[in-house]
Structure formats: structure tokens, C-alpha cells
Length: 243
Image (cartoon, rainbow, N blue to C red):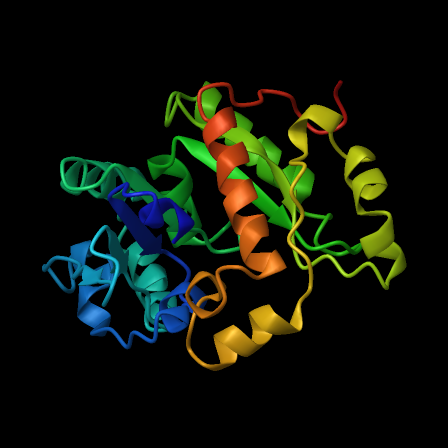
């Protein structure tokens, strides 16, 4: 949303059937007009929902039925690369930026579509022992995709600490925790904190940049965007644990 507010034509693609990004914008989509629309069983096209106030923002929503659709896609041997190419090319002329909300499960069909369509990856990590387990697996998957020429431009922008609670040990030591698994240069300076204002805005079906743009947490999203834009043309090729 911060990107769209700069005037850049931005498309948010929700590729996660949990549909949290979709719910954040209070959208209830037709299941046949999500990314699943390109699967043989639907044979239609996704439907972009324009933001009600920000003319530069469009949302391609997700729905829980995408969980069943991905099983059918796998059984029908649908090539995720073909959907990734279709996603990239269909909206290339209409938008300056495409942000894909990727499912957390790397084995997911939709995660593969997202990784094959993307040029850059921003990895949010919630401080704690369990979210870190799949970190190296993600890098291994990225390395496989690049070196098998499935998506050569794919690069990692970096890692951002999300939902940081300084009241906990993991929250206080989040930077030390992240440097134990990856290089210092891979870690974004901006950290997204736990905040009641963020939860309250979400509870009202609003975004923090709508609800209280002067809020401290809202400002962290602006500074994160600045870091993303600064890193865009100089992504990090380092693997976890390298310096």
C-alpha cells in the first residue's frame, strides 16, 4: 500500500489460500476469479479489485478454495511455470510493481508459482525458534530455481524482522538471532514491531496507513519501503551463514 501511495501502479497478488491479504482489504472474491482462474477447470481470468480510494492499487484476491485447486493442479500436471509466465506477462503493461503474497509452505503449488514469477524476494521472519527452521530450505529452493534456469533473475532482497516484541528474549535479541543464520548485509535495518494500533486497525478492516498515517508503526512501513527501493537493483546473493 505504501508503494501505491507514492503514485506507482501497484498490483497486490494474494497467492496464499489463507487469504490474509485479501481479508485485510475486506474483499470476498469469486473463487473462480482468483489465480485459480487460469487452471483448466475454470478456464477464465482472474479479476482485479481496484482499491476504493487509491487509484494506483489493485488487488488480485485469494480464496480458501485455492487449497483444493492446487491439489487438482498437481494431479492434472499443470506446470506452475506456465502460470508464473502468464502472471508476469498479463499485467506487465498495466502495473509498475507486482507484490505477491506467497504461501509459507514451500511445497505448495501456489508457492512455486510465486517463486517462478518473482524477481525479488523479501523474507519476513517472526522472531522465535520455529520460523527459522525453514529458512535454509527457502534458500535452497531459490538456488535450485536460479541454477536450473527456471527463473534466473530471482534474487533475495533481504530479511525483515516482523512482529518484534521487545518484551521477549527473541524480540530483544532479534538481530543477533538473524545474524546467527545469515549475513549482516542480508538483514534490513527496519523492524516491524508488535503494536496495538496495528491490531486495532486490522480489527476495523483498515490499514495502519489509512487509520493513523502519523503512527510510529505506519512510519516503519515507509522506512521499509525506502530500504526495499534502495536495495532493488543490488539484491543479495549470499546464502545463509555466509559473510
